[in-house]
Length: 221
Length: 221
DNA sequence: GTGTCATTCAAAAATTATGTTGAATGATGT
DNA sequence: ACATCATTCAACATAATTTTTGAATGACAC
Image (cartoon, rainbow over all chains, first blue to last red; front, side):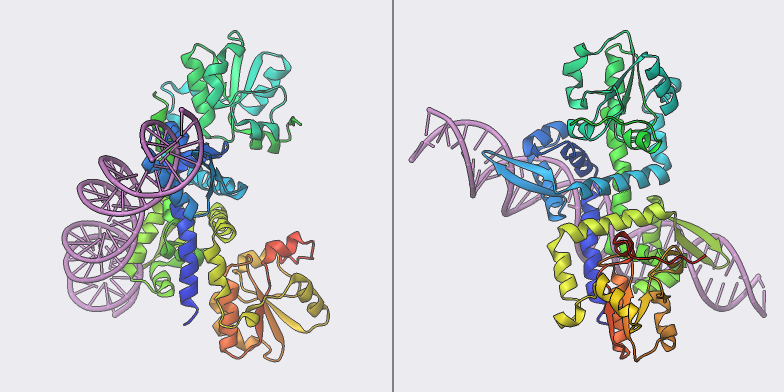
């Protein structure tokens, strides 16, 4: 059957894309690139990997069409080719969250005590916000924040959190949120805030779920 | 930093899912399973692989939470765990179609002559249908067909095509469509139909694009 | 029970991916 | 031209995946 060969060839192409995502280091690189264009050595620093290694991973991602390189002086900046890459990443994450018990286990074990990691529900947060009792922090990158966020939330990207701690009122309860239920950024933010003595909790979901629940969203021009 | 380890662990879980998709054979198995539950040896026959090999691939998919096994007498039937798996697969396919030039090349070369593979546009198809000149075949699995299809189309799943050839009027032009622009099923259908002497062409897109263009969709109860 | 069939398991061989090292390239500044 | 820095390349060692083979399990029919 002359049909079999090109079909296999197509599957191989699709597999190249999936394979590129099939490595923890590369997934971390993608999550960093989701926040904007980054140079090889910035990525290496953030991910804690040797530069040559990161360079090779980036080329695997480039061969799969997931990232693009662009020279800027001495540096080569990589960026995600477009938003479909992010939605593919989200798709992988969502399937893993849905089907792998191990993901649950890891999230459960994220904090030592169980009740302290109990997330805040949307309804609770909405009520506390009405009473003015809570500081809401959106830890996503500014571009995502600009496209829609919980009204009254302040944007403190995870990377800037340490530097911007002085802005935050230590006497108010803090609720942090990010992209989705188990997006690691809000976990990291809450952990970092607690280490510094703040009373912080996570919103149970991210912005997409907030929006989907019909709650108001604020857009920055 | 006590935060780094669980983050890595989560990436590893996500990587398990992506890795499971990162193999041409497994992608083929998934596409077969998209049409319904299948036994190991049916899958082995369809994919042209040794049974033990298929069994192992299926277990990789099971560990990634993409498929579920269920014993039925002598057979073990595997099925996709749910629709999120299909949308993950679609996401991979769409990124590959969008970013990999090689995919274009393969599709271009799918048929020897270029003009014979020229697909029918939505508008052309709509016009030919009004004139009653064309038989429209939806080659997707029945469950997808039931949820919406081009009005007047008949559902001949790819698997049943050979058996149901007698139903098809050989004097009318045939247009086949499936899930999307480069979903392999309609290519296979057209190739099979041509081998049997039918005059067949592909619709340029699949049902989602047809729907998105505002053209009518028929739903079966 | 015995035989048969579908599937899984286990171990080895073949292939492919990953991490590491040091040298090569390309751009910048002196 | 030279030195410097960011990145890539090439080569190797290591580890993981895939395929193959043959034996083991589990279910059914007799």
